[in-house]
Length: 294
Image (cartoon, rainbow, N blue to C red; front, side, top):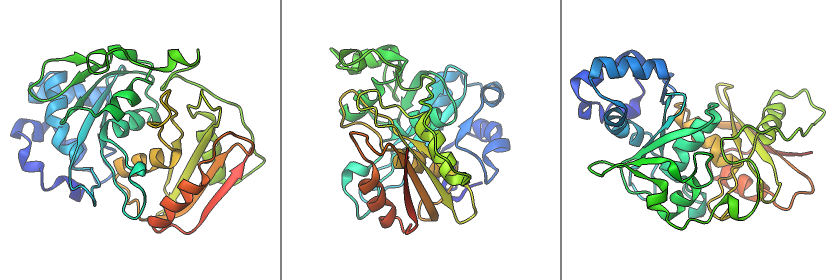
Protein backbone atom coordinates (compact mmCIF):
# COMPACT_ATOMS: atom_id res chain seq x y z
CA UNK A 1 0.00 0.00 0.00
CA UNK A 2 1.26 3.48 -0.84
CA UNK A 3 2.51 5.36 2.22
CA UNK A 4 0.06 8.22 1.73
CA UNK A 5 -2.88 5.94 2.57
CA UNK A 6 -1.47 4.57 5.84
CA UNK A 7 -2.55 7.43 8.12
CA UNK A 8 -6.20 7.40 7.06
CA UNK A 9 -6.68 3.65 6.60
CA UNK A 10 -8.18 3.41 10.09
CA UNK A 11 -10.96 5.80 8.99
CA UNK A 12 -12.19 3.20 6.51
CA UNK A 13 -14.81 0.76 7.82
CA UNK A 14 -13.65 -2.86 8.24
CA UNK A 15 -16.00 -4.11 5.51
CA UNK A 16 -14.74 -1.50 3.06
CA UNK A 17 -11.14 -2.27 4.01
CA UNK A 18 -11.79 -5.92 3.18
CA UNK A 19 -13.32 -4.97 -0.16
CA UNK A 20 -10.60 -2.49 -1.15
CA UNK A 21 -7.51 -4.35 0.04
CA UNK A 22 -7.03 -6.50 -3.11
CA UNK A 23 -6.64 -3.27 -5.10
CA UNK A 24 -5.23 -0.63 -2.79
CA UNK A 25 -2.61 -2.94 -1.25
CA UNK A 26 -0.62 -2.75 -4.48
CA UNK A 27 2.01 -0.01 -4.64
CA UNK A 28 0.98 0.66 -8.24
CA UNK A 29 -2.67 1.33 -7.33
CA UNK A 30 -3.69 3.99 -9.92
CA UNK A 31 -6.15 5.89 -7.68
CA UNK A 32 -9.10 4.59 -9.66
CA UNK A 33 -11.44 1.62 -9.61
CA UNK A 34 -12.79 0.00 -12.75
CA UNK A 35 -16.51 -0.68 -13.06
CA UNK A 36 -15.88 -4.36 -12.37
CA UNK A 37 -13.88 -3.53 -9.25
CA UNK A 38 -16.57 -1.08 -8.11
CA UNK A 39 -19.23 -3.80 -8.33
CA UNK A 40 -17.07 -6.17 -6.30
CA UNK A 41 -16.42 -3.52 -3.64
CA UNK A 42 -20.12 -2.66 -3.44
CA UNK A 43 -21.10 -6.31 -3.05
CA UNK A 44 -18.64 -6.92 -0.18
CA UNK A 45 -19.14 -3.59 1.61
CA UNK A 46 -22.90 -3.31 1.11
CA UNK A 47 -22.56 0.28 -0.14
CA UNK A 48 -24.42 1.76 -3.08
CA UNK A 49 -22.72 4.11 -5.58
CA UNK A 50 -23.38 7.22 -3.52
CA UNK A 51 -22.27 5.74 -0.18
CA UNK A 52 -19.16 4.23 -1.74
CA UNK A 53 -18.03 7.52 -3.28
CA UNK A 54 -18.48 9.27 0.06
CA UNK A 55 -16.56 6.53 1.87
CA UNK A 56 -13.66 6.83 -0.57
CA UNK A 57 -13.20 10.57 0.00
CA UNK A 58 -10.59 10.18 2.79
CA UNK A 59 -8.46 8.09 0.43
CA UNK A 60 -8.79 10.67 -2.33
CA UNK A 61 -7.93 13.53 0.05
CA UNK A 62 -4.84 11.60 1.17
CA UNK A 63 -3.47 12.18 -2.33
CA UNK A 64 -3.47 15.96 -1.81
CA UNK A 65 -0.21 17.94 -2.00
CA UNK A 66 -0.63 21.00 0.23
CA UNK A 67 2.66 22.64 1.26
CA UNK A 68 0.95 26.04 1.50
CA UNK A 69 -2.59 25.58 2.85
CA UNK A 70 -2.30 22.17 4.58
CA UNK A 71 -5.97 21.84 3.59
CA UNK A 72 -6.87 18.46 2.11
CA UNK A 73 -9.67 18.19 -0.44
CA UNK A 74 -10.70 14.94 -2.10
CA UNK A 75 -13.03 14.24 -5.00
CA UNK A 76 -14.39 11.12 -6.66
CA UNK A 77 -15.58 11.36 -10.27
CA UNK A 78 -17.90 8.60 -11.49
CA UNK A 79 -17.82 8.00 -15.20
CA UNK A 80 -20.73 6.73 -17.25
CA UNK A 81 -18.50 3.69 -17.75
CA UNK A 82 -18.93 2.94 -14.03
CA UNK A 83 -15.29 3.66 -13.26
CA UNK A 84 -14.38 5.79 -10.23
CA UNK A 85 -11.51 8.27 -10.43
CA UNK A 86 -9.80 9.87 -7.42
CA UNK A 87 -8.82 13.54 -7.38
CA UNK A 88 -7.12 15.83 -4.86
CA UNK A 89 -5.91 19.41 -4.61
CA UNK A 90 -2.27 20.13 -5.47
CA UNK A 91 -0.16 23.15 -4.54
CA UNK A 92 3.34 24.04 -5.68
CA UNK A 93 5.76 26.09 -3.61
CA UNK A 94 7.75 28.95 -5.18
CA UNK A 95 5.27 29.55 -8.03
CA UNK A 96 2.11 31.72 -8.21
CA UNK A 97 -1.07 30.37 -6.62
CA UNK A 98 -2.64 30.35 -10.09
CA UNK A 99 -0.71 27.12 -10.71
CA UNK A 100 -2.76 25.36 -8.00
CA UNK A 101 -4.94 22.39 -8.98
CA UNK A 102 -8.34 21.98 -7.31
CA UNK A 103 -9.64 18.54 -6.32
CA UNK A 104 -12.56 18.68 -8.76
CA UNK A 105 -10.21 19.61 -11.60
CA UNK A 106 -7.97 16.75 -10.55
CA UNK A 107 -10.69 14.08 -10.57
CA UNK A 108 -12.17 15.30 -13.86
CA UNK A 109 -8.81 15.54 -15.60
CA UNK A 110 -7.80 12.16 -14.17
CA UNK A 111 -10.92 10.63 -15.75
CA UNK A 112 -10.26 12.43 -19.06
CA UNK A 113 -6.66 11.23 -19.27
CA UNK A 114 -7.75 7.66 -18.49
CA UNK A 115 -10.10 7.74 -21.49
CA UNK A 116 -13.45 8.39 -19.80
CA UNK A 117 -16.00 9.81 -22.28
CA UNK A 118 -18.57 11.35 -19.93
CA UNK A 119 -19.10 11.84 -16.20
CA UNK A 120 -22.27 10.95 -14.32
CA UNK A 121 -21.41 12.52 -10.96
CA UNK A 122 -18.74 14.02 -8.76
CA UNK A 123 -18.49 13.64 -4.98
CA UNK A 124 -16.44 16.13 -2.92
CA UNK A 125 -15.71 16.54 0.78
CA UNK A 126 -16.14 20.35 0.61
CA UNK A 127 -18.52 22.54 -1.37
CA UNK A 128 -17.05 23.38 -4.79
CA UNK A 129 -15.69 26.90 -5.17
CA UNK A 130 -16.82 29.15 -8.01
CA UNK A 131 -13.66 28.34 -9.98
CA UNK A 132 -14.51 24.63 -9.95
CA UNK A 133 -18.18 25.15 -10.73
CA UNK A 134 -17.14 27.03 -13.85
CA UNK A 135 -14.55 24.36 -14.73
CA UNK A 136 -17.21 21.65 -14.48
CA UNK A 137 -19.51 23.66 -16.75
CA UNK A 138 -17.15 22.89 -19.64
CA UNK A 139 -17.98 19.18 -19.44
CA UNK A 140 -20.13 17.34 -21.97
CA UNK A 141 -22.24 16.25 -18.97
CA UNK A 142 -23.67 19.75 -18.92
CA UNK A 143 -25.33 21.30 -15.91
CA UNK A 144 -27.10 18.00 -15.17
CA UNK A 145 -23.89 16.60 -13.70
CA UNK A 146 -24.79 15.29 -10.24
CA UNK A 147 -22.82 16.83 -7.37
CA UNK A 148 -22.68 15.09 -3.97
CA UNK A 149 -21.31 16.31 -0.64
CA UNK A 150 -21.40 14.71 2.83
CA UNK A 151 -24.68 15.34 4.66
CA UNK A 152 -26.15 17.26 1.73
CA UNK A 153 -28.99 16.32 -0.64
CA UNK A 154 -28.19 15.35 -4.21
CA UNK A 155 -27.90 18.47 -6.35
CA UNK A 156 -26.86 19.13 -9.92
CA UNK A 157 -24.33 21.56 -11.32
CA UNK A 158 -27.30 23.69 -12.38
CA UNK A 159 -28.15 24.12 -8.68
CA UNK A 160 -24.59 25.22 -7.89
CA UNK A 161 -24.19 27.39 -10.99
CA UNK A 162 -27.53 29.04 -11.84
CA UNK A 163 -27.76 31.23 -14.94
CA UNK A 164 -24.46 29.75 -16.04
CA UNK A 165 -22.15 31.21 -18.66
CA UNK A 166 -20.58 28.42 -20.66
CA UNK A 167 -19.38 26.99 -23.95
CA UNK A 168 -22.69 27.57 -25.72
CA UNK A 169 -22.33 31.31 -25.21
CA UNK A 170 -19.12 31.43 -27.24
CA UNK A 171 -18.98 28.71 -29.86
CA UNK A 172 -20.59 25.52 -31.10
CA UNK A 173 -17.73 23.11 -30.61
CA UNK A 174 -16.72 19.89 -28.84
CA UNK A 175 -16.99 19.94 -25.05
CA UNK A 176 -14.53 18.68 -22.46
CA UNK A 177 -14.34 14.85 -22.56
CA UNK A 178 -15.63 14.74 -26.14
CA UNK A 179 -13.35 12.78 -28.46
CA UNK A 180 -11.22 15.01 -30.69
CA UNK A 181 -8.10 14.66 -32.83
CA UNK A 182 -6.60 17.85 -34.22
CA UNK A 183 -4.24 16.03 -36.58
CA UNK A 184 -1.04 17.99 -35.91
CA UNK A 185 2.17 16.30 -37.00
CA UNK A 186 5.87 16.43 -36.19
CA UNK A 187 8.69 14.55 -37.86
CA UNK A 188 10.13 12.78 -34.83
CA UNK A 189 11.07 9.36 -33.54
CA UNK A 190 11.49 10.62 -29.98
CA UNK A 191 9.02 8.75 -27.74
CA UNK A 192 8.53 11.66 -25.36
CA UNK A 193 7.97 14.20 -28.14
CA UNK A 194 5.49 11.85 -29.80
CA UNK A 195 3.62 11.39 -26.51
CA UNK A 196 3.40 15.17 -26.05
CA UNK A 197 2.20 15.59 -29.65
CA UNK A 198 -0.52 12.99 -29.11
CA UNK A 199 -1.61 14.86 -25.99
CA UNK A 200 -1.78 18.13 -27.94
CA UNK A 201 -3.90 16.47 -30.60
CA UNK A 202 -6.44 15.49 -27.95
CA UNK A 203 -6.39 18.79 -26.06
CA UNK A 204 -9.46 20.97 -25.55
CA UNK A 205 -8.92 24.51 -26.85
CA UNK A 206 -12.04 25.54 -28.79
CA UNK A 207 -11.74 29.27 -28.02
CA UNK A 208 -8.10 30.02 -28.82
CA UNK A 209 -7.31 26.97 -31.00
CA UNK A 210 -4.01 26.92 -29.09
CA UNK A 211 -3.67 23.15 -28.81
CA UNK A 212 -0.91 21.97 -26.51
CA UNK A 213 0.27 18.87 -24.73
CA UNK A 214 3.12 17.76 -22.53
CA UNK A 215 4.93 14.56 -21.61
CA UNK A 216 6.92 14.09 -18.40
CA UNK A 217 9.46 11.36 -17.78
CA UNK A 218 10.48 10.48 -14.24
CA UNK A 219 13.63 8.90 -12.82
CA UNK A 220 12.20 5.40 -13.38
CA UNK A 221 11.49 6.15 -17.05
CA UNK A 222 7.72 6.31 -16.60
CA UNK A 223 5.89 8.75 -18.88
CA UNK A 224 2.92 10.92 -17.90
CA UNK A 225 1.04 13.01 -20.44
CA UNK A 226 -1.09 16.12 -19.98
CA UNK A 227 -3.46 18.03 -22.27
CA UNK A 228 -4.60 21.63 -22.20
CA UNK A 229 -8.22 22.01 -21.02
CA UNK A 230 -9.57 25.43 -22.00
CA UNK A 231 -12.60 27.01 -20.36
CA UNK A 232 -15.26 29.36 -21.72
CA UNK A 233 -14.52 31.74 -18.83
CA UNK A 234 -10.79 31.56 -19.71
CA UNK A 235 -9.33 31.78 -16.17
CA UNK A 236 -10.37 28.28 -15.00
CA UNK A 237 -8.49 26.78 -17.97
CA UNK A 238 -6.10 24.01 -16.90
CA UNK A 239 -2.57 24.04 -18.40
CA UNK A 240 -1.18 20.82 -19.86
CA UNK A 241 1.54 20.65 -17.21
CA UNK A 242 -1.01 20.63 -14.40
CA UNK A 243 -2.90 17.85 -16.18
CA UNK A 244 0.27 15.74 -16.40
CA UNK A 245 1.10 16.42 -12.74
CA UNK A 246 -2.40 15.26 -11.82
CA UNK A 247 -1.86 11.96 -13.63
CA UNK A 248 1.59 11.60 -12.11
CA UNK A 249 0.33 12.23 -8.59
CA UNK A 250 -2.72 10.00 -8.92
CA UNK A 251 -0.47 7.21 -10.27
CA UNK A 252 1.64 7.43 -7.12
CA UNK A 253 4.54 9.27 -8.76
CA UNK A 254 6.65 12.01 -7.20
CA UNK A 255 6.27 15.39 -8.88
CA UNK A 256 9.84 16.24 -7.82
CA UNK A 257 11.28 13.27 -9.74
CA UNK A 258 10.80 14.63 -13.27
CA UNK A 259 13.99 14.18 -15.29
CA UNK A 260 12.81 15.41 -18.68
CA UNK A 261 9.75 17.29 -19.93
CA UNK A 262 8.58 18.03 -23.46
CA UNK A 263 5.95 20.64 -24.31
CA UNK A 264 4.39 20.56 -27.79
CA UNK A 265 2.29 23.48 -29.01
CA UNK A 266 1.55 25.53 -32.10
CA UNK A 267 4.30 27.89 -33.16
CA UNK A 268 1.81 30.53 -34.30
CA UNK A 269 -0.87 30.01 -31.65
CA UNK A 270 -2.54 32.90 -29.82
CA UNK A 271 -1.32 31.46 -26.50
CA UNK A 272 1.85 29.80 -25.29
CA UNK A 273 2.23 27.53 -22.27
CA UNK A 274 6.02 27.75 -22.38
CA UNK A 275 6.92 30.36 -19.76
CA UNK A 276 4.56 29.07 -17.06
CA UNK A 277 5.54 25.47 -17.83
CA UNK A 278 9.24 26.20 -17.60
CA UNK A 279 9.00 28.18 -14.35
CA UNK A 280 6.83 25.58 -12.59
CA UNK A 281 9.04 22.69 -13.67
CA UNK A 282 12.12 24.57 -12.50
CA UNK A 283 10.47 24.99 -9.09
CA UNK A 284 9.85 21.23 -9.07
CA UNK A 285 13.54 20.57 -9.76
CA UNK A 286 13.35 19.61 -13.43
CA UNK A 287 16.08 21.28 -15.50
CA UNK A 288 15.63 19.47 -18.82
CA UNK A 289 12.57 21.15 -20.35
CA UNK A 290 12.03 21.30 -24.12
CA UNK A 291 9.55 23.02 -26.42
CA UNK A 292 8.61 21.65 -29.84
CA UNK A 293 6.19 23.39 -32.20
CA UNK A 294 3.98 22.22 -35.03
